[in-house]
Length: 325
Ligand SMILES: NC(=O)c1ccc[n+]([C@@H]2O[C@H](COP(=O)([O-])OP(=O)(O)OC[C@H]3O[C@@H](n4cnc5c(N)ncnc54)[C@H](OP(=O)(O)O)[C@@H]3O)[C@@H](O)[C@H]2O)c1
Image (cartoon, rainbow, N blue to C red):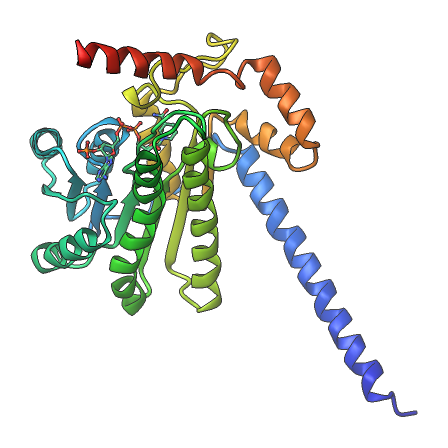
């Protein structure tokens, strides 16, 4: 008996669907086991032929990232930022202590034309960037109505748009060789809200979306060797968020910038797509996926997160007043 075409078509779609479900289960189980066995050593990839660009490499996390990269002996490290003294200090420290070629260029990453211009100059001097680390960031830190529109725009341009401009500048050469790595130093605020930091959260949520989309786009176009990694840390002990404090500061102290850099390198060298620091953030993210908004608000209130930016504003106001005096 002949099976009608529509039945055999439906049967083959069903077979394909079952295959996809089984494949998804396999990949999820693999990821779960990999995450549970986080203490299990995983091989690091070799970066001895890579040219690494770190934006915001002069100070803070960027400086520690440069030092951490240097331990793995890449071919060249280049730092971008606006403060020459800081960039020079980091580049000298890397060259002296780790004996790795490290140079810097002044580049304001919030400005598209400047990014393109400096990218061309960089390529002519050092060759194609194969590991791009978008780390530069800023926070304006006021609630929506009190915040200066120019500062809000600067936050979006620095934290989000710079990732897009640098990717547009350096992706084409990565695509030509189907080889490269794009890293974003994002934040836990790219996944969860914080009252009093709407523009910062909007910029970081935007980076989350951009990086996820980029990964999907590259995969759908067959660029299997261009990797994306997103790092989502909680508060770090740099001056960026000084003054911020939650109800239980001893339970959740700021992360050390050296630790963030070390974990970032671990994620980069093992081609991990995304990590949250510290690990407890994975639970929060899990709860957030099914809890109603008012339940999340109750948790934030209990932990003092809803008002934690008040100390930050107070510091900003004090700084402003002392500058006026
Ligand atoms: N600190 C935290 O609590 C925290 C938590 C989670 C995520 N993060 C993220 O981690 C990253 C690093 O922050 P951090 O803590 O190291 O802050 P930081 O100490 O304030 O350093 C910020 C870095 O970004 C650079 N930068 C800022 N605007 C720039 C611009 N327009 N063009 C070029 N470079 C620019 C600065 O360099 P110049 O001054 O030389 O321009 C500096 O190197 C940021 O993306 C931040 O959002 C921070």
